[in-house]
Image (cartoon, rainbow, N blue to C red):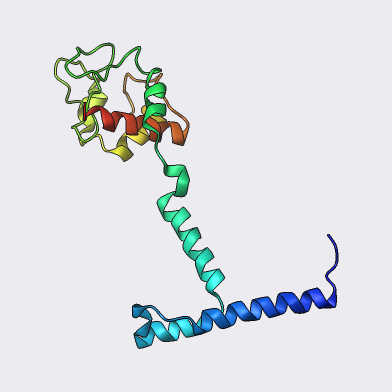
Length: 172
């Protein structure tokens, strides 16, 4: 990397100074007129980049960022691994495993005419996205004693996509 000359450093400093002046003289949003907000903003003036980076970091941390995106068609492809035992067709009979049509939001072990394991029957509750996620990640750990032992989906993204597909089956 080439060293900066004195002239280049002066140019960089003047650009940074102009950016700081612009952020300091910019019109304040309505919520910044509050005395407490104004003091907070004043203490962070010139740190617009830092505040923006913190906001972006918070978004990635708390929303999961783009990695949380769900791909229903990819979930349908992933479901093909499950199709040997399960179906998602409305009204289709249970197979080795229960029919999973519209399973998200339904009570656990509630499909008629299916003989669930004692462990799953006793589990209670509802198949929420989070509960399905934990179950699909490691069925035996989530519900010790379940008969579904071969259906683990280790990839977080694969599970999100699969669950998105299962949510979508309730609409058809």
